[in-house]
Length: 173
Image 1 (cartoon, rainbow, N blue to C red):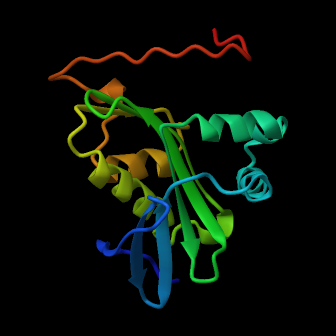
Image 2 (image 1 turned 180 degrees about the vertical axis):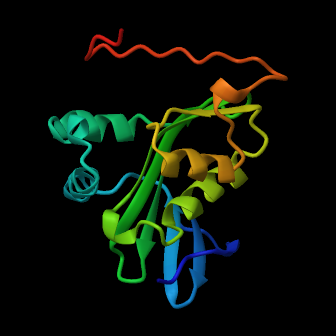
């Protein structure tokens, strides 16, 4: 299976609508990473449903509002314009960036789409002091984020850090 790797962000450049576009290709797979307005609601619902994130799909209007109010929303699309993946987050563009969601349609996983999205965010926000995200405890997710330079707070020794989490939907302890 072909994977996507970085070609150049500047090869395509900003569009008339202010969105930032980049092209990645390798082995015949070309995808466009695009910053700008979120995809339409039907595309969003299909993508979130494809990865089983039903807490988002139960309330479509809340999902649309969450994406509209995000600090950034970047999508990956193939040459035909099909939505392959999405990353979104919030940031003050100085001290903190929080990646809220990164998801890739199962048919496009393990092809470099998630990496392309995250590398685009890491490049754009390289100057931000701290980048944070929460993820499931699966070995694949942990390895993926480690490969991008993230560290699990459980393993920090030189800079002891604690992460705290609160979820209003469930009893955690």
